[in-house]
Length: 96
Image (cartoon, rainbow, N blue to C red):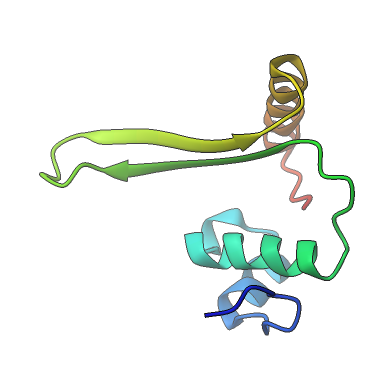
């Protein structure tokens, strides 16, 4: 296990998803590791808001549950960030 992801190599899936500008190609793990790599390399500085949203099945596989982790200075800032991301997704942008 590592506490620093700065030297973690990019996966083939991550490279393919970025080249295709297609978020559906990413695995959940690739998304988290890519963010940690950029954070540990110092590419992400003064990170005011972080929101990790995931949808998963309950253990009985009957219900879908949406859960999240967040870090923000305020609820207003968090909601503003979510609105900005909604706009970028609707526009077809693949920023990260």
